Each structure stands twice: as C-alpha cells, then as structure tokens.
Length: 82
Length: 310
Image (cartoon, rainbow over all chains, first blue to last red; front, side, top):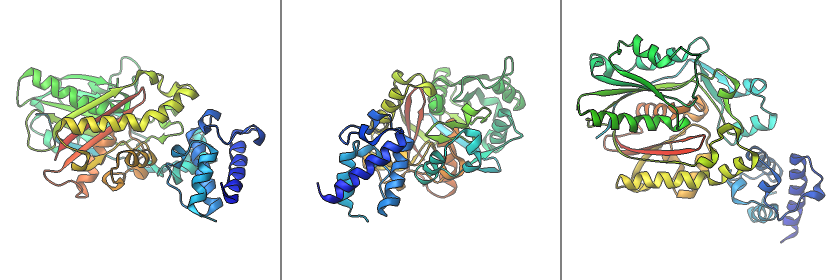
C-alpha cells in the first residue's frame, strides 16, 4: 500500500472512531465496519466526509462495496484525489 | 388477464421540506445531510386538514373510468402499510365505499405485505375476479396513508414518508396495462419490522439488493422477458440510493428507473409505484406496448415485483 493509502487509512480510523465515539486504538482496519455497529446513515456520513476531504465524487455504493477501512483506503488510493 | 383499467393519483398541495421536520422526527444533522445528499430526499407532500378517507376520495374523484360503472365494482380494497389506522369501530374503507355508492361491493383491507401490499391487492383482486367468473366485474384498490404518528412519518435511517394516494381500477379484460406476471418473497427473519435489533437491521441491509434482484428477475422471467426488455421500472420512493445499489448489482441503467418523484413526494407507503405510473405516463415515459415493472418492498420483509404491458 502506498504512503497515500496509509495516510488515508489513518484518517479513516479517526473518522470512524469519532462516529462510533470510540478510541481510535480500538478500531481495527481489517474488521468490517458493520461489525462495529456503523449503521447505514453513518456509512453515508463517511462517504460525504471522504468526498469533502479528497475533493472526489464517490459512488454512494462504496459504503457497501468496501466493508473494511483497509479495502476502502485502497480503493480511494486508486481514485487519485487530493 | 388482469389489467389496470385506470389509475388516478392525488398529490396534496402542501410541500414540506424534510429539513423543516428535523426536530419533529428526531433526525440528527448527520441524518438530514445524508437524506438530502445521498438519498435524494428533499420534500414530502401533506394534506394536514384531510383524513385518510379524504385521501382515498380525492384519488377516486379523478378516476373518470369509474363513472357509470359503479355497479360493476365487486371489491373495494384498501392496500395499506399500517395494520391499524383508525379507532374501532371507524372503518375508513367502509366509509369510502358508502361515499362512492358502492355498498353492493365487498370492502376490506390488506396490509400483510406492508408497503408491498399494493401489488398484493392487484394480484388478489385478479384472483377474486377470475374466481367469480364475471368478465365485466371490477375491483377498486386504494393506496396511500396519513402520516399521523411519528412512527408513520419516517422509516428510521431510510426514508421520510408523505401522503400521496392512488386509486386503481382492476378488471379481468382490457388491452392496456395488462399484468403479465407477479413475484413476491417474504423473509420472516425480519418480521419485527421497525423493531429489528441492530444486528438484524444490518443483515436486512445486506440481503436487500440480492433479494430484490431475485424477485425482479423472477417476475421478468415469468413474463417471458429479460430485464433488458423493460422500458421502465416504477419503483418505491423510499430513497434513491437503494436503486443505485440495485441497478449496479443487476446491470440495469439507472435512467430506466423512474426516480423523479423521490425528492417531490418522499415515500408514500403502498402508493409509490402507482404515483410513479401516473407521473411517467404524463411525462410520456410509457409508450403503447412498452413493458414495465412495478417494484415494492415492505418491512417485515416482503419483496414484490409485477410486470405489465402498457
């Protein structure tokens, strides 16, 4: 994974932790976000935050297509935003 | 063959921004933002001074094909989402039957498929009429409900509900809007409806597109068609993103799904596909001979699809 993807992964961990009101250290990047109880609304909140952060337009289905932070970060890295 | 001999819709004049309902519905800032940005929701329609009887009669008032044929109506059916809508002994569908001078007809409600009960009513009325054997007999179906309690105003995290209504005249014979097939699937694991546990709600979100896709495919196969043969899908108006997800799964172009009403009406219970039929027809989106499909999903959870030829 590139440095950019690592940066994204760290940023996503912070975002997910804030949605779930958990310590970032409790968030594993390889665990399905639904396992943490991230509901569909917050999955879309995350999409909106990603769009704002990376200045990209996402397919709204990314919330379902990429279930873990690792998978999502790798996908976002391929989009080449920022 | 069952056919929709006429459809009429009523859209209340009061348009309410969903943002103005944030406090009343207990929606967070995040939910409102998601509803507007991703779900394609914007406004709903309401008839604040009207009752559910008024909603049904307003749609019936536009059903010109009923005039002079009242004596042929054998069934008056309210297809609704909510099992209880009035205190006993008030019975809105009996009141509507009386107002329309249809006392000779049987009147009852179906709600077992929740928001998919509209398509169930079309199927059921066709079966009843066929069993009766009178080729001229008709059934009159009503869809559309009042958002009279907080629970009736939203599907949490998913939709905001509005008050449009439709009246549908069903007959056994007819050369327009013929029913070619019907497919339905109920998954009882989700029978708790709005009271699902978080785990079950997440499971429902996961199985939703595959299950609806299977029902759509079953319906088009029963009709001897493929998805590519459909000129239009007339969907539920729960939200836009659920259709984006489904279309991606089944390879159906999104512009084949009539989503124009999602930001205008919100989700109007069992009325959505019929409101969309009326709008699509008025916009010239249906041409004679076109094949189209109505789709609905009811909490509980029932997935239904019906294929027609216009």
